[in-house]
Structures are given as structure tokens and as C-alpha cells.
Image (cartoon, rainbow, N blue to C red; front, side, top):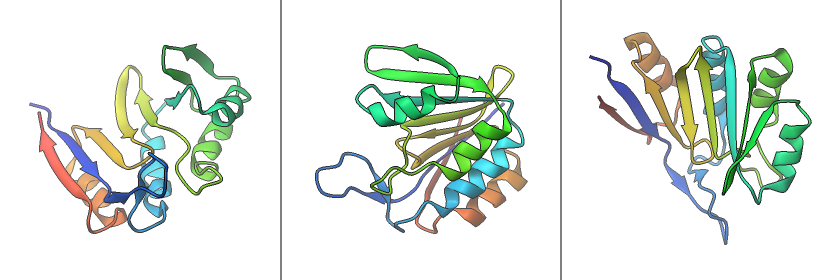
Length: 149
């Protein structure tokens, strides 16, 4: 039976922003996690709120498949060096917050890593023990973990 690993980075919000930021005030774990799971993925999906115009325009320039829904815009495309580089090096906005509400790294039709709430909540389907140890080695110590079916 598969068990999913869910983990949440301890966060705070700044001023009027609704975007959670890591208590450690950096996203160093982001690069490590994305690097690790990009190796297992062939497709990348990114969700933004429709009012995040600047981020949507930036993503649109990457020539990804785009779907507009009621409140969100979804971008999806095959993993390429350009898209991988974008995820690893352009993940923060001008307020030093993660740009994307959701990032899914997929292999075939399966999600290998889900990142939600602007890079502070994650789900890893059916992780191996070495995956769990790696994750715990790169996330902040205050991170909360839960495994469930």
C-alpha cells in the first residue's frame, strides 16, 4: 500500500501579504528539492492565481501549454533545460517570495513531487527511505512531517 509523505515548512506572513514565507527567511531547501525531483520528472506543471499578471506573462514567454480556469492559470510542459533552469533560478518574486502557488513535477501521468502554497507545503507519493532521509537533510528543522495513505 502506498503512503504519501506530506511536509510543511514553518512559515510566517509579512504585512498585508497572504503569501507564506519560510520562518528561516530563505528558500534554500527549494533548490535542493527541485534538483532532486527534476531528475525523476519528465513534465512540469505550474499554477498561478489569475491576478499574478507578471508571473503569468513570464511563464507564457516559455511557450508552455496554458489553461485559464476561473481563478487560476495552469502552465504545463515537458521538462527542458530552459524550464528546469527557470524553476531553479527564477523562483522568487521581487518581494523574495516563491512565485508559484503550485508546482507539480510529473513522470508520465504520475506526480513525483507536489509543492503547494508558494513552496511551503509538499507531498511526495510513495517515497523510499532514502528520499525521506534526503528531504529531512535539506528542509529546516522545524518542518512538520506526516505520512498517510
